[in-house]
Amino acid sequence: MKVKSFAAASATGRKILSVLAGALVFLSLLLFFSCSYSSAKYAEEDRYYQGEEPAPEPEASVSRLAAGAVMDESRPEAPREKRSRIYSASLELEVPRPEPVRDRIAARAVELGGRVESIRSDGIIVLVPAERFFTTVAEFEELGNLLDRSIEAWDVSDYIRDMETRLRLAREARERLYTLLERAEEADERVAILREIRRLTEEIEGYQLSLETLAERVAFSRISVALRSSLGSGAEQRAAIPFRWIRDLDPFAVTIPRLTGGIEPDLGPLYAVFSEPPAGEAFYAESADGAIVRFGSVPNEPYGDADFWHQTLLHYLDPLFADVEAFRLSGGKLLPGLRMSIPGSPSYRYELIVFPDGKQLQVAEALFPERSDPALIESFRNAATEVFR
Image (cartoon, rainbow, N blue to C red; front, side, top):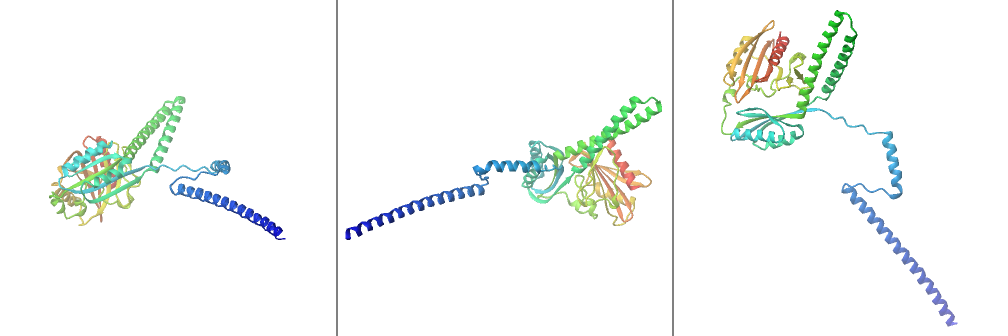
């Protein structure tokens, strides 16, 4: 009886050991797969946080790619429109000696693939490739003690698009006129068609010139750097001028607010007019060879007539500029003006025309390269005569 009981107990023990062994194997497998899953999960998360895209699961990769392809075909992503912007910056630096800094700025602009547009004793204006604009501005700021900085951006995309549309339509119209000219038999008809072809040709040339100017300004950004000597400067004469707008005049920068009354001067096809100048600033236009025209308004304070402001400008600007020449334009009313050279920048001439109009003083400014086409000066003066008459 005892032997039988012992055998039965042994069989029972073996069954228990077998169950325990199976349980241990199951737990081991469970633990192994759990660890494998955790390792794969954390590895995938590591790739995600490191900026890598997790690989798709093998079984689902084909279906996901197919779904993505269907989605891309049904909803294509619209390409982002490239905008055309013109950038410019004005910096004022305090340095011990302006000349070495000025020369360094000029050399750096040329090294970057740009050029020097104007150079004077107390400053310089350079053009640099637009893609290097912001880094170059930051680089120039480190050349001295930064006293002032302004950065402007003009979006000319819509203006360029409008100009291109006008150019295309003018060309198409001219081609149709050439076809009509071949068929015309009457002399009067041919003369009329030729006259219209000539007019369209002038329009086309004007549009092309404007687009070339804008393309140049988009490709190269202007940086103007004024240099003030920390060892003393000749700014005392300018500081003594009692009229702030005259004191702040700068041929190379916008200093006069926008024209009052929404006046739009007509400069003709030789200039590209910026339809959206910086908010609150003057009417601004530029030619292909770098001539700049600005129109603006300041309060007529103290209240004065044309002779008063002509003598005032001559008195205060004569010490600041060279070869100051006074002139008057007659367009119904006498318009006093000054034409002068810029010290340190003999390759430019600066013109200033003023017209007292009640409580406002209308001001026209122009900066011309020394060898500018005389037609540019004539267009500027004609526009001033039309606006201020």
